[in-house]
Image 1 (cartoon, one colour):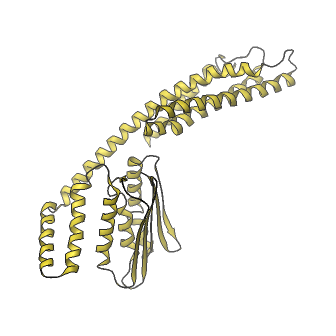
Image 2 (cartoon, rainbow, N blue to C red):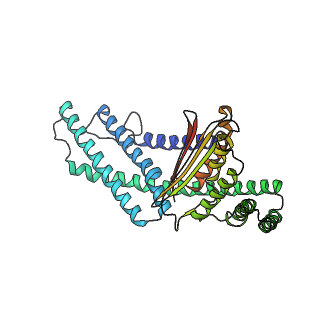
Image 3 (cartoon, rainbow, N blue to C red):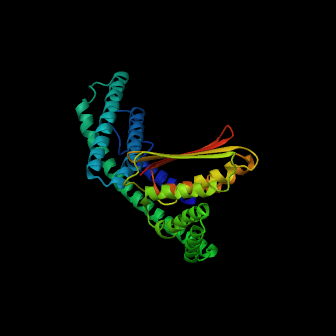
Length: 349
C-alpha cells in the first residue's frame, strides 16, 4: 500500500510539474501560450491536450506494451507505436481544428483558423515526444515489476521449502514403502488395494520429481487430478457422485504444476456429506491454447465455504500464484450460487 501511494504521488508530482511549466499564464510559466488568444481561450485547449496525451501515455504503457513484453514480437511493438501515434495525432488534430474554429468564430478574430494539416504536423511532434516517454516509462516499469515478481516467486519458493522441511516424513522413504505395499497387495490378489496404492504412488512420484519443473505436460497434471479423484472415491458413499471429463487435444500443452488441484481439493472438502447426497462436477475444456477449468460442488457447510482453498486466504493465495505465473493470461471467477460453489478458471497456456 505504501509503494502504491508513493507511485501515485510521484506521477502526480511529475504531471503537476509538467502542467505548471506548460500551462498558459497566469496559471503556469506560459510555455504553452498562443499570443493570438486570450488566456481564457487557450486554457481549455491546453487542458484537453494534456488529458489526451496523458491517456495515450498510460494506455500504451500499461495496456499495449505489456503484451510485447510477453510475446517479444518486434513487429507488434512497431505496429503498436505507429497505430497509437497515428490515432492520437488525428484525434487531437480534429479536436484542435474544431476547437480553434469555434474560438475564431465566437471571439471575432480577424484571421482564419489554422489549417488541419498544420495541426497534424504540430501534434506529430508533441505526441511523438509523449510516445518516446511512454516507451521509456513502460519498459522501465515492466523491468521493475518483473524484478519484484521474481523476488516474490523466490520468497514463495523459500517459504514452501521451509514448510516442506517442517512437515515432511522422508518422502523417498514413503515412496519406497508404497511400492512395497503395492507388491504385497498384488501378490495377495487384493486388486482394489493394489490399484489404490499404485495411484497414490503415481501422485507421490509427480510431487517428488516432476512438479519441481516450472511447467509440466498437461497430461501429467490431468493424470494427477484423476488419481486424486479416484482415491477420494474410495471413501465416498453411494449417495455421492463425482463426474470428471476432459475435452480437447491436450497433446504438447504445458502448464504450471499443481495449479488446478486446490479447486478440486476444496470441492471434496466442502462438497461431500455422510448424511446428504452430493454431486461434484469437474470439467476441463481445451481449445487451441485456451484452457477452461470448471469445478462445481454443493456447499454442505455454509459457514465453512469462506475458509477453503478457494475462499478467504486460500483464494487470495491461488490468485497471487496465478497473477505471478500467468500475468494477464488468466481469468478466475469463484463464488456461491444457489447453494453450490462454482469455480471457473480460464488460462491461456
